[in-house]
Image (cartoon, rainbow, N blue to C red; front, side, top):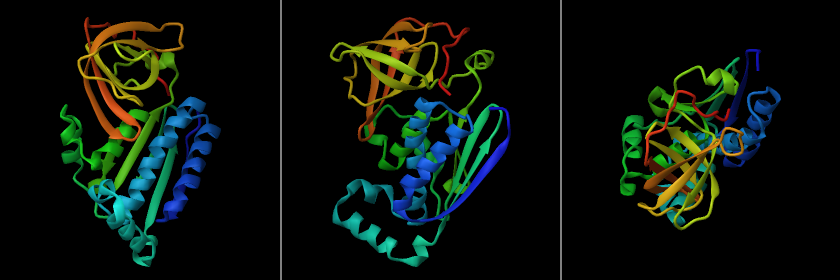
Length: 266
């Protein structure tokens, strides 16, 4: 992708609009050459979280705790908001910047914002009890794009993916790694997962299967690529973040070299 251009959408806060808007953003990213089909599917998950959060938690001002509890209280509150023009007519502003080596989606709501730093601190904990419902969507977005950041007191979120080729990415130092990996443990046969971050001593990834803490694991980096390699380690974290996803971390038995890092999915 070599041409810089942008798109701009402004939508009303209607939950039924989330899916068509997300599909539109996905199709535009594919048409612009910002991603391939595999990455487009990851973007759908991240876009859905971002736009839904902007409407439900931002413009509708419904708390994550209430949504997590579910039941009649949440359903009634949601229906009240959907019938109230003061909430439904609030705007979600979506801007897309297609750059030569990066694509950025900026989603801004008209709600009250939230304490970004407090939530991010909780997400860094290894204690699953500290990962509140309000942070689970953030963990999902962080898993499927290269960068997530906030502005305007949490009312604005930016999602970014790198669009550089693998050879270009190899020239820069980085710790973000969002390629497809293979995972095999004591109890589970090999399955695919999406990596979040990679270091010399371990890897974090998103799994659709719960994995027992303490199990040994074999991680295949750059799965389906000619330069794939296997690394042995131990499961040190497995936290449920949002059905059906788990945030998993593995500590490698032996530190690996990152001088020639594996190719990162765009």
